[in-house]
Amino acid sequence: MGKFNFKEHPHRRFNPLTSEWVLVSPHRTKRPWQGQQEEANKEKRSEYDPNCYLCPDNTRANGITNPKFKSTYVFPNDFAAILNDTPEHIEEDDLFKYTSIKGECRVICFSPRHDLTLPEMSVSEIKNVVDVWKEQFIELSKKYKWVQIFENKGAVMGSSNPHPHGQIWANNALPNEASKELISQQNYFKKNNSKLLLDYANRELDNGERLIIENDDWISLVPFWAVWPYETMIIPKRDISTFKELTENEKLSLAELLKNHLTKYDNLFSTSFPYTMGWHNAPSGEGADECWQLHAHIYPPLLRSASVKKFMVGYEMLSEAQRDITAEQAADTLRSLSIMHYKNN
Ligand code: H2U
Ligand code: ZN
Image 1 (spheres, protein in one colour):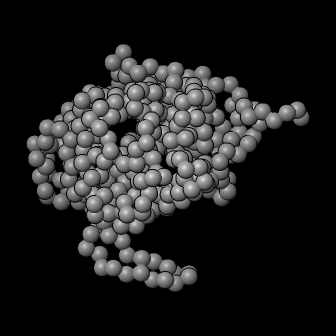
Image 2: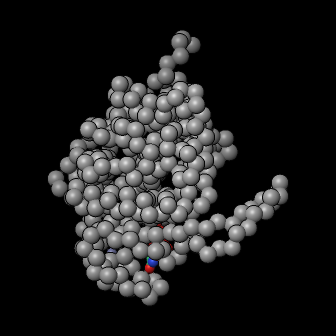
Image 3: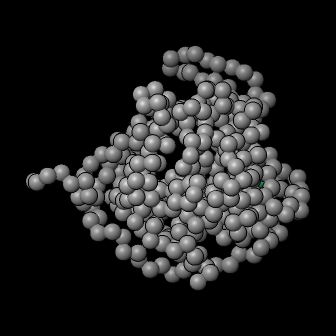
């Protein structure tokens, strides 16, 4: 049987942020991914679509007309999942517990262009998106405990509209992921008097195996405990709890990192890479700033090609998540990919 080898033998890895385990089965794919050549998807969409609800000067589903916006544009979601005029109610039953929720939902059109996804936008255009993320966070975090800024990209992720856009849902309760991450980061801070994710980022910087991109202010990496094949995180290198603290330079270097990181994703299967990406800022009113490090999670569903997606079923629904290619193999692949977008080659 020999000695345990992390690169060959099945094992479980612990996610210190959520306190959940993931089953890793590296023996199923001993070789690193050879990069099956895909037919590059160079499909051209038009810059403007008269039927798109999110293009400038078009009328949305509820009859409101968008302005002729020239940069990143935010509007209240016409079909918001959370409303801000819901009456307060809490039901404290052991078996049928529920509580009312108040909040608001907004939509962010990344740019007026119908055809440009984030990696295809210029760094200064992506910087406009980062500026808006920060402004929106500052405004909404004054009113709400949790401000979730995210993007669902691609039809496979359930995105309802090809016009590049993101969303913001802000509400006064702490959702599941946020509360798991808060408890873990608080416990780690109590024990070590330092931030879990900052310590983690420094260990990854020393090690290098799972790093994808590093610039002066940010790193992107495949987390040790990644569940999705090409799951990644973006973490600032200095102690930062929320978008509020980002300087002009840090917003610019984030825009640069996003462009390069997301371009690598598109280059992986020569396709506009689908994912859910979202920012975890420290929640407001919880005294969380001392333990919570700002970060983004990116969860892409694709596994082997533009059309083969990973299904989280069977053992994963019933017991725990499982992966074959290791985080280190995924990071190797992403690191080796060009930052020149395949559509420009
Ligand atoms: P998704 O593609 O991730 O579903 O996001 C699009 C959002 O845009 C969705 O939440 C909103 C939908 O409610 N929307 C409007 O607010 N107005 C519209 O006219 C179309 C879509
Ligand atoms: Zn459009």
